[in-house]
Each structure stands twice: as structure tokens, then as C-alpha cells.
Image (cartoon, rainbow, N blue to C red; front, side):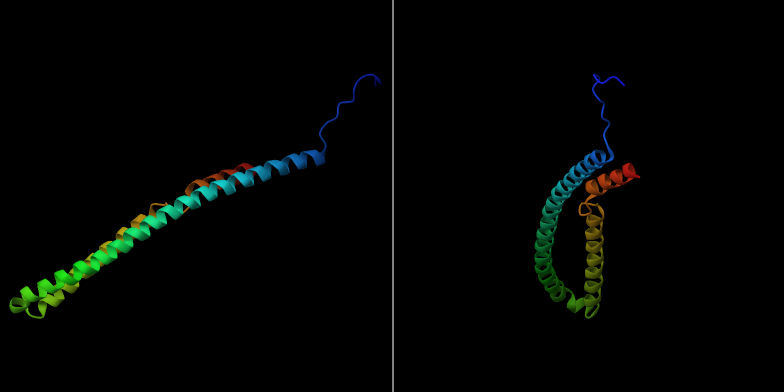
Length: 128
């Protein structure tokens, strides 16, 4: 070996591990930021959903009360107790339909952190 040539140093195990740890920390920070962004979107969607549901419930109660009272008064002479059965069946169908709508809104995935979960799956696949 020539003493005048500079010694080429190859990165050691410790410096490689430090670099990997830095990259993993940066990756973790970016994923936390992504999750925080999606949580803020979820909060916005939840608030809107709650507000719409609350207004819908109040309007529904008023509509049910007034229409039911009107139908009972108008149809009692002709149908008697059968009008109560008809109203009960109608309101049951409306309730089931509303339940299906809420379930479909929840299944759209707005509350499940889809982007964060996809990125975490990519990270897992890249590391394995």
C-alpha cells in the first residue's frame, strides 16, 4: 500500500444503522402527519354527519307527529284501528330505509383512514 494514497473508508455497521434509524424515524413522522390530516378530515365528516342526522331526527319527529295526527283524524271513521296498523307499517319501512342509508354512508370508507392504511401497507411490503 502506498502511504500517500488516502485511505478509503467504507461505511461501517454503526453508521449504516444510524442512517436506517434516521430514515425510519422520518418515515414514522410522515405517517403520523398523514394520519393527523386524515383524522381532521374524519372529524369534519363526523360533524357533518352528526349535524345532518340531528336535524333530520328533529324534522322527522315533527313530521311524524303532525302527519300521524292528521291521518288518524281523517281516516278513523273509515278504517278504525286499521289506520294504526298502516301507520306502524309505514314508519317501520321508513326506519329500515334510514338505517340502510346510514350504513351505506358509513361503508363509503370516509371514516377508515384509507390513505394512511394504504401507505402503511406499502411500507410493510417494502420492508419485508
